Image 1: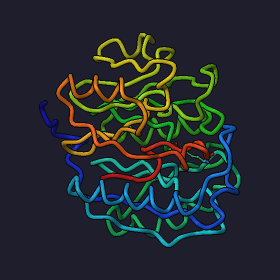
Image 2: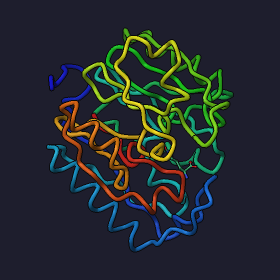
Image 3: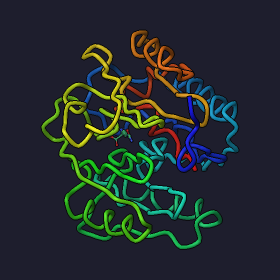
Image 4: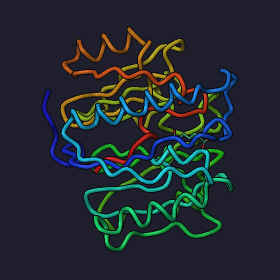
Length: 264
Ligand code: CIR
């Protein structure tokens, strides 16, 4: 496996542990109420995994004013060439951006912003080297994607949009497809067959393993959710090095592996 320059030599990550009222956050799935103690345990293991991959972590203060605030990925897009603070599409999450602004200022002194009526959730933004796929979803609207595309273009990146609203069962673009480096995507069949992904090698997840489409390349490892043996074996067979993590409690709140951190 070739470790690419540009994108996957991360040294830092921002995380935030779930607040005690985490179960009061938004969800579209019917998988029961998350167990808070187990969520804390899974989050701690997730942080330990990032540290094992060589990342130094910044942990934001727990924020019970925002029950979804453990899903830090949605509040910013961090690239090698600059940062964009988002404007989350759920009203209850708008206030999460302020703490993220404070946290990134020492690393990214002049982040761009998304202005009303634009909305963008970081979970809809899939960085694939020089190109970004921007999901249009219930959270990211066309205006948000337009503003983001302009910011990215100024940084020298290209982008294209993908409407995920017709794909059943996914909240964000990255719930259904992930870029793991080496020109490779992992994706649900409904997305993987789209012509805009034709120049990539695509590892397809089966319908039963669709939750595992949200995996995360972190330096030499690929974080994969536990319980999905087929895609984990396939990753291994292709020369990737999966690091398997339990995500059951975050899944109940529509969260995947990528949303629990911002890596840069
Ligand atoms: C929400 O509905 O906003 C949270 N409960 C889950 C957000 C997951 N974020 C992500 O996948 N990037």
